Image 1 (cartoon, one colour):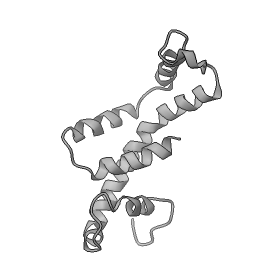
Image 2 (cartoon, rainbow, N blue to C red):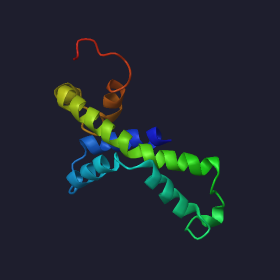
Image 3 (cartoon, rainbow, N blue to C red):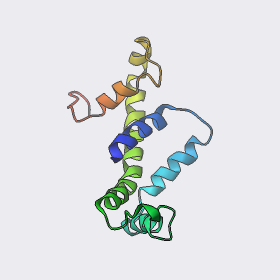
Image 4 (cartoon, rainbow, N blue to C red):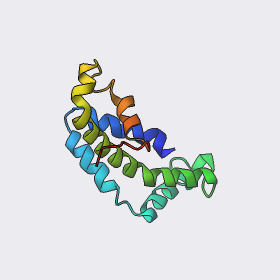
Length: 123
């Protein structure tokens, strides 16, 4: 679940330029150190009977566990993806631009390059 959201967000954060981008990067890097107890407590407060989502009766269900784990791992995936895609963009920018791919159009290619396929000749 976290990969479905985190990979595109991290890649877009790597290539997009907007005001406050640095603050967003610092926020996600800081959230990488989020203790599991804090993530669990946040989900508990959201899903408890007095919480905003208490009427859904999801507390102590597998759905709540998945939500807590997704909340915990999402900042890690976003930050690592941003870092890798920024490095790949710096390396392949000229080639991608010469082929007519702009920053956002290059996202699928850069995510493919960041995958588990071995890249021979790269250190």
